[in-house]
Length: 388
Image 1 (cartoon, rainbow, N blue to C red):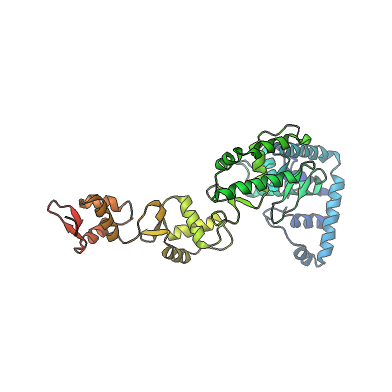
Image 2 (image 1 turned 120 degrees about the horizontal axis):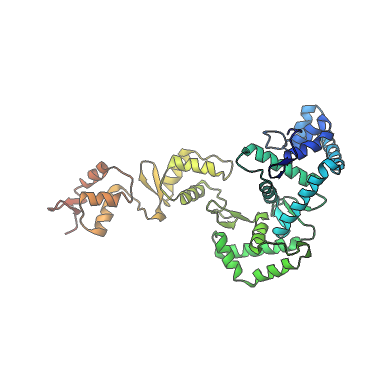
């Protein structure tokens, strides 16, 4: 984090620069400790522990904690000086506006992302690394320099870290989340956002939420959209989560948070929508980032072989049975086609088989040579041996 960056960007505040100006009052050690504790250095995305930093300085973790506290105290004393106070006041005002817009409560990441977008710091001219550094700088500024203006609810088993207007009752958020869980659970399967709101709006609870939010005087009727407020509350909950298809469901459902490899295979294939080679399925699972467990092609192949939800339709290529693919060999597929449609020419058979299998014409020709199954008729069509 360079100290000589400007406080403003083309769209307004520059959070890296603002924090850099504040950090001028720190000693080199205080600055280093805070940067490492809050991942504020260039290319640093992970926070370092007190113990790790202590070993680096050959002091105890408690001494590092004291240095961290002293540094933050200096920053809090410094935030009232003229050079930065107007920027912090502007930021405070905009945080207020965003919180009011979303019903007084926002997931910490939602708030940070919204502000970074608002100030034009997520544009194409900035690298992903630079945007990430702006976000971490902003998160530090809010949590350490503006925390007396808003209330932060820490990360728990049930909800993510949250910022809220102090006057917004947390009971309202819990009531809304409880109702959303109830609606989703009653359907027993993941829902699109539109489906969720269609179901919610058919209930008296929806209008009751509107009345309760309208009664919150600190919001001053600045909420743009009740649905956006409900979605903001939903984002704070760990009980509800989105899957790969942008559907919401209960977090413990395997269609939302798959734990078994078989469920991961099903989800990535369902999202892709077309047959895939088992190596492609492994790549997609790893890209999806369900968890830290790496999907190996050999493991995926074994799962596909053992699970009757999948059908082998070519060399290492699998499809979902629910897409209409039939299990069995090419010979079985040809027999099924002829049983349904009656005698067909070789080209007609090839066309039908290609809907079920990714095989070469020679493979179909070879299968048709099975005289126990198929017979060639006088008009050059093929039929089943037991067909008249």
